[in-house]
Length: 318
Image 1 (cartoon, one colour):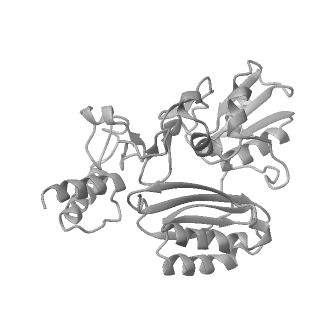
Image 2 (cartoon, rainbow, N blue to C red):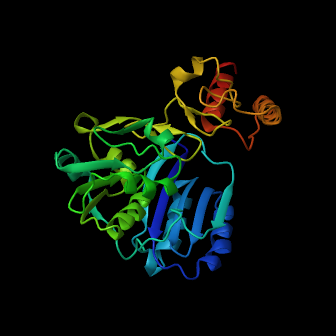
Image 3 (cartoon, rainbow, N blue to C red):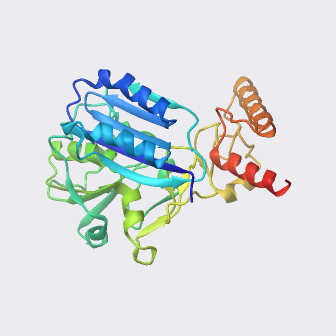
């Protein structure tokens, strides 16, 4: 069985005392050897953390004990290695920055559609399906027929919507994202813009992949995630994608054969875009990573997959 559970969690609510929770969560996570990132802001909480299942249950139990977070959204996956190397609890103005005022998602948001009803909705020819994620995420996989906004950041999403003149207030719009949080904010924005029928995939792509059998699935490709596993397949298992530390974008297995790919330094999308100082820093970091592997020590810049493969090869020789 995988050694680590990974909990992706979020909730929009009026978190007036969010500052007071920072040390409380840091203390619990340190004592329980939980690693990852939790963001706290006046609009709510968002985070992905990894550790023993029991430790993560204790963490979510603490959060859910507060009645404001009793219905905290939690998606669970597994990893053979801890995909995080340290624990961070950060204070933010927004847990999902959009860059402009929107109604509170805790007060107004689109209609939630359960994964088992999602196929029927997006198969309706009158429904416009929009992927709210960024371009590098969409490149790995998306739902059949979905519109790619080609955004580099979530803050670009409102501009994309404003340019879609064919969208009318009566247009049925269905949206999805990785875990559901971006859609709640995006749908609040659309409703504020005057759209009347806005739908969102409950629990996001991860919930869909967990719920809908692959033979009935309308999902195509892999799902990018924001930890060192990089991407998950339909069975929520890590894929063979790596992360380019030159541009922080995923690199598919076939792309590693490109002349521009240098592990830990560059890929076909960012080669020749770095100055000599950055190249030197990236190569030095990669050298330190390799030395850490040789000593069987973790490195702050290591990727879980690379470390896992190294350990596998090491075990074959002992």
